[in-house]
Length: 603
Image (cartoon, rainbow, N blue to C red; front, side, top):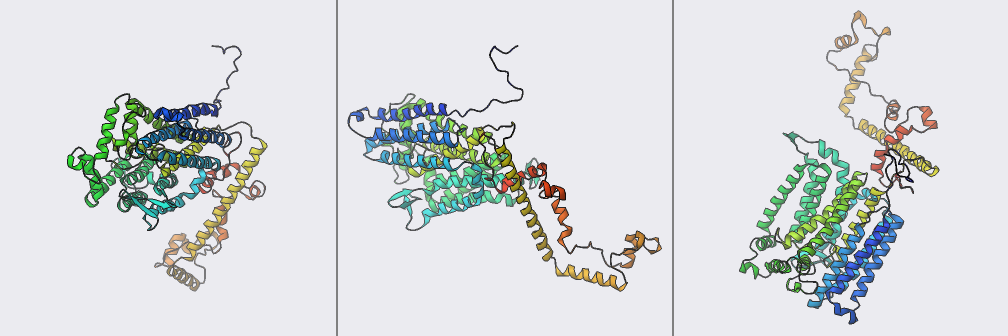
């Protein structure tokens, strides 16, 4: 069939160029801000004439913040996913509206504080997008993130800094403001897990004994999982926070499964959860109380128990049931009857006033965000970016599952907050940073890679990159030579004594130990091995070790980091094939060394 008139013929093997789609994002942002502002108005329409500045202030923060982030994406990450930012803005706006609705019946001011934290979180997300041009630079701080995670989790335990609220010691108090360091720790732990697993994935997959169809990993490869398990148990023991313990350990189990695709890791993780949960329920009273409230929620004795009763769970279930299919309407329900309705139980408030349909729509927004995160993980080309995007998306979906499962009595109530919606500045800040990192990775995944003729700038960039590769190879050669020299220095004196003894024996016969007559023949027609055995029946020949490292330099130079010959070394500094073969090592050593070109290609 011939092409339509006026249509340009499509070249064979040429994929369509990816569009930035920033205009689509801008239109969706208008809809998202409209949803947040409209929900605020529907909560109490009489506020429009009362002079309450909350609706105007929250609308300005959402609108200006969304516009600024849109401009930042246009300038720094124009190929970022166009749906992530509108989804997050819509969820944040709905959360502010519901918190304000609960404030009207409880005489609180949590909504005003949430608006301020929204501005701070959007600013932090903009800074991340502006400075994180290449997400691979985070790989440099893999183990720094591990240390930072430990420090963040230890801060609430410090006397004078840590603060205990409702039986859990997971907050710190600075200047009269409370902050939860564990919310930031989930980001640093995700960076550490992504860096560790992307580096050691092959060892985890291939090393270890195979028992039947299952290959068991080595203990040294299991050490990080045990470390994550110990961290989770430590949080459960010392901070008495069941939700954070489940979140941290679930994060690592999800990421190691994504890295290896082995169900055995899921089985091992579930076994460790079962062992840890049983141990905690037998030893720690607060864990036993949570389990009792979950299993016997409708028992009058458990319902009326204070503290640790099941009244919060039961009232939340009654609120969900009263919402029905279509809900009572915004501002028409009684979410104030549920304790902590603006934080832990905010999903029951949405279920009561928006019904099953409205609550399902909110959950669909979360699932869309997670799927766009996994889409970015599939599209990016480096293993670290894949694991980081997938891990951060897994954090959101795991936290949502724990929250929704807790309020519906599917699992014990843990006290985690709903991402982007619950009252709480530390949770909102960390989740906006997660959204910014996902946007940065999606930009790398969606930007086109041009394979046409290279420009002068591209050639200069490639030449500089190859020079950096040759310099890295030279450093590798020097390190290899130093390791060889250290091994020689550590050679046992006993072996040196044996070599001297053999040399002395050969000197007594009047010839070197390895000397042979001219022609390579031994007297009597014996072959060299027979003559050696007959001359020294009690000794063993050992290969002579060159006293100078110059003998090993040609071998090292011919390796991955060497040059083929002197002419190549003088004129070319290594062939392009040799230079590109060292690209993986250089990227592993310096992930942020390569730069993005203007046409979208990655050098």
